[in-house]
Length: 168
Image (cartoon, rainbow, N blue to C red):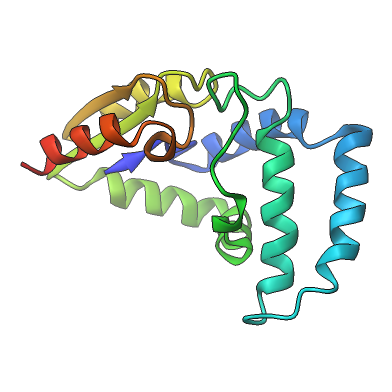
């Protein structure tokens, strides 16, 4: 099951990064990065990644709530930002293109059933999901109404119904 994957290969990552820069720039973003960087220096745990998780988690909130970012249904992005892991994000972002493409090829070589889920409100990543169907031998797409990028957070009842139907 893939819920709102933004990209499945190195070319997709490049496209995502290009588009995402629109939402990670400007005075407000820079000011928040500076303030959050100072605040992160005072985070002392629970582990060595806590400061970076705090910084990145807060900045993800600024990114997702940018007024032009189409990740949500118009009322802002309400999923908790603390869930965002800085280490996993930087590892994925910094993976060599060849590794991204190998991973994409390995995943798409899977012959079992695959469910792609998309939030109907996400005008950026949502429209990509139908194009991913052809990458899998046996894939279906569930578009969840009244949901943005965080499909399960935005509309848990509809998302869980789609997940349950898929697992049946």
